[in-house]
Image (tube, rainbow, N blue to C red; front, side, top):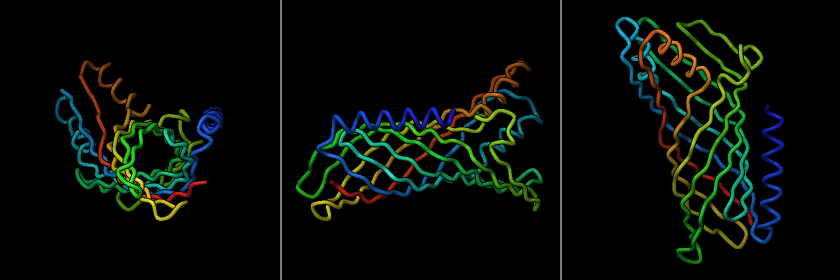
Length: 221
């Protein structure tokens, strides 16, 4: 699955660059986001404790990536880290999940002046789970992709909507800033939890979203 995704990603970008060959740049960027969880359910007590736990988990997302920009299209690849912490119901949890991320977005740039270009944007990230490091009540554990019952049960797909700006430093170098709002689709693991609740005759929905800030530097050819 991962090899197919990477191959599709590379082929799509090769085609895009042939179309946009006159305006290509490359760069690196870092991002920081804060993800909030909203759960709706009619589960009875004491099962509702899991809902409280999900909503009270603090989740921070950060990452680093390399990108290739072809004016109206940008592709990026890198690593994302989801850091979760929770304390309650006699449990103290700290977990860091590591993902290899592929991102693709479309944008419409227009110049404000000779130094500044702004652009609305929309795109998707597909984060492929690689490793989890967890500490529960002082006990540490590490899990890898091969340990999962289903290899893609923790992979994350997200929709990103936002606004960005490029600030020219000189003819070739620019600084890029973005503010995105990320909407995360349910993982297979979360879908299994929802299906279990529905099989027992209850409603359960999990919605995760939040702001993501991105800062990078690019080089125009």
